[in-house]
Length: 219
Image 1 (cartoon, rainbow, N blue to C red):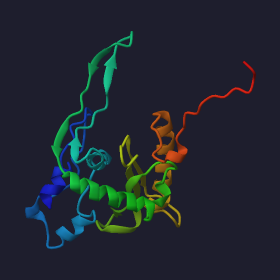
Image 2: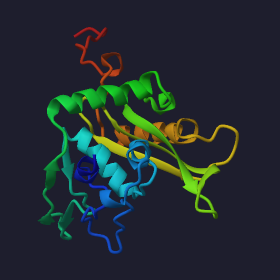
Image 3: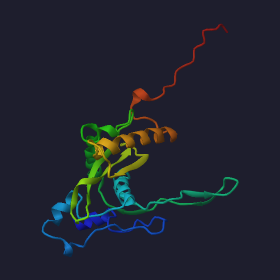
Image 4: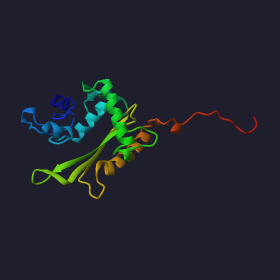
Protein backbone atom coordinates (compact mmCIF):
# COMPACT_ATOMS: atom_id res chain seq x y z
CA UNK A 1 0.00 0.00 0.00
CA UNK A 2 2.86 2.35 0.83
CA UNK A 3 4.50 1.59 -2.50
CA UNK A 4 1.34 2.46 -4.42
CA UNK A 5 0.93 5.72 -2.52
CA UNK A 6 4.50 6.70 -3.33
CA UNK A 7 4.18 5.55 -6.95
CA UNK A 8 1.52 8.23 -7.40
CA UNK A 9 4.03 10.84 -6.21
CA UNK A 10 2.88 11.44 -2.65
CA UNK A 11 5.64 12.04 -0.12
CA UNK A 12 8.03 13.33 -2.80
CA UNK A 13 8.63 16.52 -4.76
CA UNK A 14 7.09 16.60 -8.24
CA UNK A 15 10.17 18.34 -9.67
CA UNK A 16 8.19 21.31 -10.97
CA UNK A 17 10.32 24.39 -11.78
CA UNK A 18 9.25 26.34 -8.69
CA UNK A 19 11.31 26.99 -5.55
CA UNK A 20 10.34 25.78 -2.11
CA UNK A 21 8.15 22.85 -3.15
CA UNK A 22 6.89 20.80 -0.21
CA UNK A 23 7.02 17.00 -0.32
CA UNK A 24 3.95 16.76 1.88
CA UNK A 25 3.60 14.45 4.87
CA UNK A 26 3.86 10.67 4.55
CA UNK A 27 5.48 8.66 7.32
CA UNK A 28 7.47 5.52 6.50
CA UNK A 29 5.68 2.21 7.28
CA UNK A 30 7.89 1.54 10.32
CA UNK A 31 6.21 4.54 11.95
CA UNK A 32 2.66 3.43 11.16
CA UNK A 33 0.30 2.36 13.93
CA UNK A 34 -2.21 -0.49 13.90
CA UNK A 35 -4.78 2.02 12.57
CA UNK A 36 -2.63 3.61 9.88
CA UNK A 37 -3.64 1.31 7.04
CA UNK A 38 -7.31 2.08 7.60
CA UNK A 39 -6.71 5.79 8.21
CA UNK A 40 -4.54 6.26 5.13
CA UNK A 41 -7.10 4.48 2.94
CA UNK A 42 -9.55 7.37 3.36
CA UNK A 43 -7.00 10.19 3.46
CA UNK A 44 -5.96 10.71 7.07
CA UNK A 45 -2.40 10.50 8.47
CA UNK A 46 -1.17 12.04 5.23
CA UNK A 47 -0.63 15.57 3.93
CA UNK A 48 -0.46 16.32 0.20
CA UNK A 49 0.03 19.43 -1.89
CA UNK A 50 -2.46 20.62 -4.47
CA UNK A 51 0.08 19.89 -7.20
CA UNK A 52 0.67 16.32 -5.98
CA UNK A 53 -3.07 15.71 -5.90
CA UNK A 54 -3.57 17.12 -9.38
CA UNK A 55 -0.64 15.13 -10.78
CA UNK A 56 -2.09 11.92 -9.32
CA UNK A 57 -5.44 12.53 -10.99
CA UNK A 58 -3.65 13.45 -14.22
CA UNK A 59 -2.02 10.00 -14.10
CA UNK A 60 -5.48 8.48 -14.48
CA UNK A 61 -6.35 10.93 -17.27
CA UNK A 62 -3.04 10.14 -19.02
CA UNK A 63 -3.75 6.44 -19.25
CA UNK A 64 -1.86 5.44 -16.13
CA UNK A 65 1.34 7.48 -16.52
CA UNK A 66 2.48 9.93 -13.84
CA UNK A 67 3.82 12.99 -15.65
CA UNK A 68 6.27 15.61 -14.45
CA UNK A 69 4.38 18.91 -14.16
CA UNK A 70 5.78 21.92 -15.99
CA UNK A 71 5.08 25.65 -15.69
CA UNK A 72 6.32 26.84 -19.10
CA UNK A 73 5.32 24.91 -22.22
CA UNK A 74 7.60 26.86 -24.57
CA UNK A 75 9.60 30.07 -24.91
CA UNK A 76 9.26 32.24 -28.02
CA UNK A 77 11.31 35.18 -29.26
CA UNK A 78 9.85 38.54 -30.30
CA UNK A 79 9.08 37.16 -33.76
CA UNK A 80 7.09 34.24 -32.41
CA UNK A 81 9.73 31.62 -33.18
CA UNK A 82 10.06 28.87 -30.58
CA UNK A 83 13.39 29.21 -28.77
CA UNK A 84 12.81 26.42 -26.29
CA UNK A 85 10.10 23.77 -26.10
CA UNK A 86 9.47 21.54 -23.10
CA UNK A 87 8.61 17.96 -23.98
CA UNK A 88 6.26 15.93 -21.78
CA UNK A 89 8.15 13.65 -19.40
CA UNK A 90 6.57 10.47 -18.05
CA UNK A 91 7.95 9.68 -14.59
CA UNK A 92 6.55 6.12 -14.46
CA UNK A 93 3.49 4.01 -15.12
CA UNK A 94 1.32 3.74 -12.02
CA UNK A 95 -1.81 2.03 -13.40
CA UNK A 96 -2.41 -0.67 -15.98
CA UNK A 97 -4.85 0.15 -18.83
CA UNK A 98 -7.60 -2.05 -17.42
CA UNK A 99 -7.33 -0.39 -14.03
CA UNK A 100 -7.46 3.05 -15.67
CA UNK A 101 -10.78 2.10 -17.30
CA UNK A 102 -12.24 0.89 -13.99
CA UNK A 103 -11.11 3.97 -12.06
CA UNK A 104 -12.39 6.29 -14.80
CA UNK A 105 -15.80 4.61 -14.74
CA UNK A 106 -15.93 5.03 -10.96
CA UNK A 107 -14.98 8.71 -11.27
CA UNK A 108 -17.64 9.25 -13.94
CA UNK A 109 -20.17 7.61 -11.65
CA UNK A 110 -19.26 10.00 -8.83
CA UNK A 111 -20.37 12.86 -11.08
CA UNK A 112 -23.25 11.16 -12.85
CA UNK A 113 -25.00 9.81 -9.75
CA UNK A 114 -22.83 10.66 -6.73
CA UNK A 115 -21.73 13.57 -4.58
CA UNK A 116 -20.05 15.33 -7.52
CA UNK A 117 -23.18 15.85 -9.62
CA UNK A 118 -22.81 19.63 -9.44
CA UNK A 119 -19.53 19.34 -11.38
CA UNK A 120 -21.34 18.16 -14.52
CA UNK A 121 -20.74 20.19 -17.69
CA UNK A 122 -23.39 20.15 -20.41
CA UNK A 123 -22.20 18.30 -23.50
CA UNK A 124 -19.19 16.69 -21.79
CA UNK A 125 -18.58 13.71 -19.52
CA UNK A 126 -16.74 14.69 -16.33
CA UNK A 127 -14.74 12.19 -14.26
CA UNK A 128 -13.91 13.34 -10.76
CA UNK A 129 -14.17 13.07 -7.01
CA UNK A 130 -15.33 15.28 -4.18
CA UNK A 131 -13.20 15.74 -1.09
CA UNK A 132 -13.98 16.92 2.44
CA UNK A 133 -10.75 16.70 4.46
CA UNK A 134 -10.79 17.44 8.18
CA UNK A 135 -8.18 19.94 9.37
CA UNK A 136 -6.11 19.50 12.51
CA UNK A 137 -7.19 21.83 15.32
CA UNK A 138 -5.13 23.47 18.10
CA UNK A 139 -5.27 20.31 20.21
CA UNK A 140 -3.65 18.22 17.47
CA UNK A 141 -6.85 16.31 16.74
CA UNK A 142 -8.97 16.32 13.63
CA UNK A 143 -11.51 19.14 13.78
CA UNK A 144 -15.23 18.41 13.60
CA UNK A 145 -15.82 21.91 12.18
CA UNK A 146 -12.96 23.07 9.96
CA UNK A 147 -12.12 21.23 6.77
CA UNK A 148 -10.86 21.63 3.22
CA UNK A 149 -13.58 21.10 0.61
CA UNK A 150 -12.47 20.10 -2.87
CA UNK A 151 -13.38 18.70 -6.23
CA UNK A 152 -10.76 17.16 -8.52
CA UNK A 153 -11.55 15.89 -11.98
CA UNK A 154 -10.78 15.70 -15.68
CA UNK A 155 -12.83 16.45 -18.79
CA UNK A 156 -13.74 15.19 -21.34
CA UNK A 157 -13.51 11.79 -19.69
CA UNK A 158 -12.91 9.88 -22.94
CA UNK A 159 -10.16 12.17 -24.29
CA UNK A 160 -9.08 14.41 -21.40
CA UNK A 161 -8.06 17.97 -22.19
CA UNK A 162 -8.13 19.42 -18.68
CA UNK A 163 -7.45 18.34 -15.12
CA UNK A 164 -8.83 20.86 -12.64
CA UNK A 165 -8.61 21.00 -8.85
CA UNK A 166 -10.85 23.33 -6.85
CA UNK A 167 -9.86 23.49 -3.19
CA UNK A 168 -11.59 25.73 -0.64
CA UNK A 169 -10.04 26.26 2.80
CA UNK A 170 -12.54 26.22 5.69
CA UNK A 171 -15.76 27.04 3.83
CA UNK A 172 -18.66 28.16 6.01
CA UNK A 173 -22.40 27.63 5.88
CA UNK A 174 -24.76 24.71 6.29
CA UNK A 175 -23.81 23.11 2.97
CA UNK A 176 -20.02 23.35 2.82
CA UNK A 177 -18.68 20.00 1.67
CA UNK A 178 -16.79 19.36 -1.54
CA UNK A 179 -19.83 18.47 -3.57
CA UNK A 180 -21.66 21.56 -2.34
CA UNK A 181 -19.10 24.31 -2.84
CA UNK A 182 -16.15 23.05 -4.92
CA UNK A 183 -17.98 21.02 -7.58
CA UNK A 184 -20.00 23.97 -8.94
CA UNK A 185 -16.82 26.06 -9.25
CA UNK A 186 -15.20 23.21 -11.21
CA UNK A 187 -18.15 23.20 -13.63
CA UNK A 188 -17.94 26.96 -14.24
CA UNK A 189 -14.17 26.88 -14.80
CA UNK A 190 -14.32 23.80 -17.03
CA UNK A 191 -17.14 25.18 -19.18
CA UNK A 192 -15.26 28.38 -19.98
CA UNK A 193 -11.88 26.67 -20.41
CA UNK A 194 -13.27 24.05 -22.79
CA UNK A 195 -14.86 26.80 -24.88
CA UNK A 196 -11.62 28.81 -24.90
CA UNK A 197 -9.63 25.75 -26.01
CA UNK A 198 -12.30 24.85 -28.59
CA UNK A 199 -12.62 21.30 -27.26
CA UNK A 200 -15.54 19.72 -29.13
CA UNK A 201 -18.46 18.38 -27.05
CA UNK A 202 -18.85 14.64 -26.61
CA UNK A 203 -22.61 14.98 -26.92
CA UNK A 204 -23.40 14.79 -30.67
CA UNK A 205 -26.59 16.82 -30.13
CA UNK A 206 -24.44 19.80 -29.13
CA UNK A 207 -21.97 19.55 -32.03
CA UNK A 208 -22.17 21.84 -35.05
CA UNK A 209 -23.14 20.06 -38.24
CA UNK A 210 -22.32 21.03 -41.81
CA UNK A 211 -25.40 21.57 -43.99
CA UNK A 212 -25.69 22.28 -47.68
CA UNK A 213 -26.38 25.95 -48.40
CA UNK A 214 -29.57 26.60 -50.34
CA UNK A 215 -30.34 30.06 -51.66
CA UNK A 216 -33.94 31.05 -52.30
CA UNK A 217 -32.89 33.80 -54.70
CA UNK A 218 -32.85 32.99 -58.45
CA UNK A 219 -29.54 32.43 -60.20
